[in-house]
Amino acid sequence: MGRVTQPVRVLRIDGCGTTPRPDRLAVEEPLELRLDGRAHAVTMRTPGHDIELAHGWLHAEGVIVAASDVLRAQYCAGSVLDDDSGTPVNTYNVLDLMLASGITPPRPRDTYTSSACGVCGADSIDSLGRQGRYDLACDETRVGADLLSALPDLLRRQQRTFEATGGVHAAGLFESDGSPLVVREDVGRHNAVDKVVGWALLAGRLPLAGTVLQVSGRLSFELVQKAYLAGIPIVSAVSAPSSLAVATGERLGLTVAGFVRDSSLNLYTHPERVMKPLASPGPPRSRQARPAKS
Image (tube, rainbow, N blue to C red):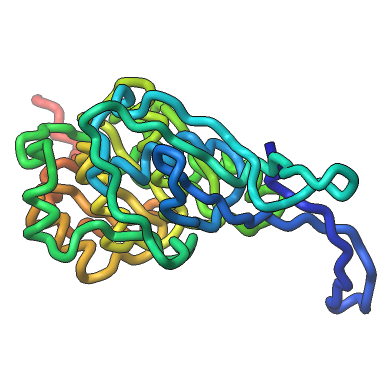
């Protein structure tokens, strides 16, 4: 398995002068996905949890709905050749998935699946609604506003690669009481969410009713799409959502929260799932002493 961080030397310039020092970078490498032995797509990602990534991506594409739809996932040799023997070397950057009988592979893609852009898999909110299998409008999950505002810090504590590099995104799945289920990191925001959904699919936990998806950056349509298809009722981000992310959440029954930082947050859609904190009681009123009865 490839490394998730890589050591480098940098020249640090600050108010104290110029100092050479060691640093670490988040690794970004291509992953070629093959379906039934045929090249299908290439995505840029941080190595690690690649099988979860592949399952989550295929789920978002509407190709699979359960772990049983993939019979086998294995790494295979790529185009890199051994210097001495000339034979292909397993770089762990080529993953072949054998689909179950009756599962039709999609048409191969001619372009990279960027770690920055992701692949939408749906051209509109309407088509996404037709693709979905879970009615989120009926999900009665409730969480406290104070718990929701605490999730970014809970996510941050488990971001080991970010701690070492400062160069990756994270997605975390939490129970409605704040208990963490899984946290995944990647150079791509979409990849991190695909790894989370892939984990849930392989564990047989779909739909993810009663959970909250917390992401470390902004919230785009693609991330809301992936959450909707996995049955996640609440999506929370430390930065802003896009207009299409909000429109999608409103239409399809997701609660969308943004700018979730410190003790504040914005609720854009379906705020009924978030219980506001009770107003703090004011100081007790002073009572005037009654004159004693004569």
